[in-house]
Length: 444
Image 1 (cartoon, rainbow, N blue to C red):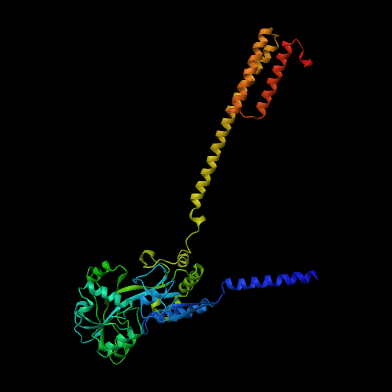
Image 2: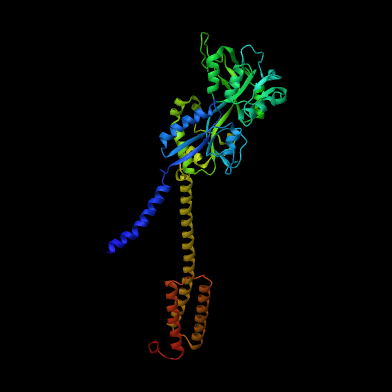
C-alpha cells in the first residue's frame, strides 16, 4: 500500500520533469524566418542552399525563406518590434553598408555583392559620366543597389535628376535592357545572379560590361570612391565569368572588368540565444564545401574576419565560434599564474622569516629577565642583610610590572618562556618574603 502511494505521488513529478526536459533540450523543434532578396538575384538561391544544409546538419531547425525587396526591408524585419505590414524575421541577408539599428547582429560574412554595369553592345556608354541623360535601371526603392548607385553617382558628379532613373528589381531591369527600354542597368549582386545569367546566356553578343577603370592602374576614381565609402572594395569581374550560347558563344566579359563590391553578411536579431547562433555558425562554416557546390558565391564564406569591418556588431554566439581555437584562460595565463604563485610563496616565506625574527627578539627580551632573576637568586644565597632584602623585593616588583607592561604592549609573547619566567619570579619573591620574616622557605 505504501509503495502504491509513493508511486502515485511520484508520477506527476516525473511527468513534469519530462515536460521540462522536452522543452529545454537541444532537440526542440524550431523555425527561423530568413529574409532573403529579390527574385532573380543571388540572395534567395543562396538562402535555398543554406536551408538544405541546415536541414541536414541541424534536423531540429527549419529555415523559412521570406523574399525581400532589398536590404532596407530585410533590416526592418529584424527589429524587436517590426512594422505590421513589413513582416518579421530572425535572420536576414544584408549588405554590409546598410544603415542598421541596435536590434541587429552579424553572424557571418557570406559573399561579395559585385556591381554589374551592363549596356547594349552598340552603346556609346563607356563610364559613369556617360550615363547623364540616359535611361538607367537603378534597383528598387529600398534596395542596397539604389543606395550604392546613388553614392557612386554623387562621387562622379551626377545626381538622380541628371539621368532617367527607373527603380526596378533585378529581373525586371534585365528584361528592360533586353527590350531596349533601358540603356543601362547597374546591378549590385553576388556573382552569377539568375537574371543576369539568363540575359547573357541567351543574347550574350548583344550586351557588354562597362569597366570603371584599368586593372593595372591604381589611384584612379575607383580608389577615390573607396576613401569616401569604406564599406566598398575594388574587385574585378574575370573574363568569361558568364557563359553565352549561340554560334558566337565566347563568354562574357571579354576582358577583366574593374568594378566595386560590398560584402553581404548573414545577420540576425540580437536576442537569438548564444548557443543557437554558435551551432548555426558552426554548421555553415563546416558545410562550406557543400554550400559552394550548390552556389559558387559561398566560396567567400570564411571564419576569419575583421570585426572592425562589420557594420553591425558580431553576435556573441558567432564570436565564440570564431575564437574556438584560441587557448583557454588557464593556458593563456599559465606563466603569469606561475609567476604569481612563486611570488606568493616567496612573500609568505619572507613574512614567516620576519615573524620568526620578531618572535626571537621577544624571546631575547625574556632572556634579559632570566639573567636579572638569576643574579637576584645568586645574591639570596649569600644571606644578604635586611636592607638588601628590601631592595631586592623592590627590584622584583619593578621587574614584574615592567614584564607585564611589555606583554600588554605586545613586546613579549605569552608563551611557555613567559610562564617559566613568572614561576621563577614568584619563587624568588617567596624566598625574599621568608627571609624578611625569619622563616625558612619550607614553612611557607
